[in-house]
Image: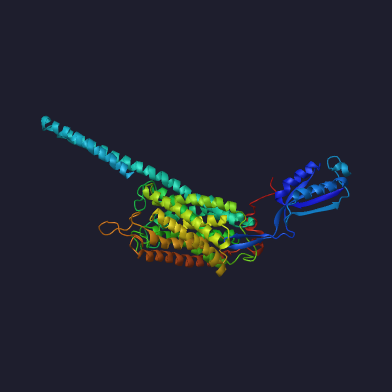
Length: 112
Length: 481
């Protein structure tokens, strides 16, 4: 099992979600996050006082999939989230030792 | 209203004229025994005339009273929720409730003070500087009008309308010491400030025997709706507070952006609407002067909003929402003393001047001197109020409000453009008195409160936020489902 963690532009989130649903990824956890990579922030001015905002809003999508679905899922995210500009985000993939469904204690792929 | 009453009276005159010959025709034929009947019919006519006059007066009072009660409610709405939202949106999330509370609690505090003795100190005759205690506990303030101030509304209406001004004035100051003052200290400060600064200033300008009263004072100052009383005094006192309390922890290095300009927009719109009660209501009647003040108020707000946004657009490349709403408030402040004295085009001019001037005050002047007037009370109300006082002396016109009359009762020039350049000096004197009273009074009060209870929260409490440290609550409780 692999965990895929994708940090994407808020404006691309809907496209990412539909792309994942199309290839049959059924579960995901989504959070609104703030952060930055190489993308520079922006400046806000309130009554003449300037503030640099370098933590920009992003959407983090997390999902755990069986090994054979990991590559197609990553491909789907790449296709849907890319605008070609700096700030498009990143994808991290990690190995998962175990998954357990709380309701009936299904384990492994069956729990996904 | 008066015209309508006249028309009715004239109608009666015609009826009387038609009836009179008939009366005369009867008299000779009925001869001597009849004069009693003639007298009784003329008494009857007289009593009907009296009843009619009474009805006309009652009708006028009903109209004026309806308008003034609505205006009183509008002016209260300026403090809560208007100012509470405007200021609440401009502070950081951790201080939103405490900031709104500083406005809201004054609706309670000042009302009680006003009921007990505040109204008496401002509006009963006394000295040039302060009233006396004859209206203590509102003794004698009832349904009968006080013709010295407003002859066509119950004195209680006048009293409660003026109370709303006494509430918003100290509430304006809270923006200067936002995010760092103890709640206990704020309460004590406001009680003392209302008594020591507001009550004397209001009596001097509006009291019938006040020093600056426009028609009877030694220095006749024009202040239609409280530009000097409300905005100059609160603005200058705010600056003193900001300087005395010092900067917020982290200012100006740490970013302290408004946590919700959305709240501030709603608040500013409520202020704008409420200001119609503030300015047009200051006509104290529902006549054409109220209309004139209403139009002037609206026009100045519009022009100032555009003026501030344009100045900002030119200087920083973008017209901000906060700029547009701040400009509107600046325009409303500047037109306050002038509202009932100037025509629509003068109002546009006053707004167009006030917007960019106040923008410079809160950006360049503030950053040059480095004081932390957190929500720009001085820049908008102190500067805008003083500017408005001066511009009133420039634009006031006898065609709008013939406030000055010569010995024969003929209206004379009012402002500079009208042909009375000296009025500007009176306006400056009025503003200067407000500055001096505001500075000296506020300094003394701050010192006293500092010694008694301490002004500032601890650094730890300030970092935690006033919502939790002063009130044990949070504005946005995201865990509550």
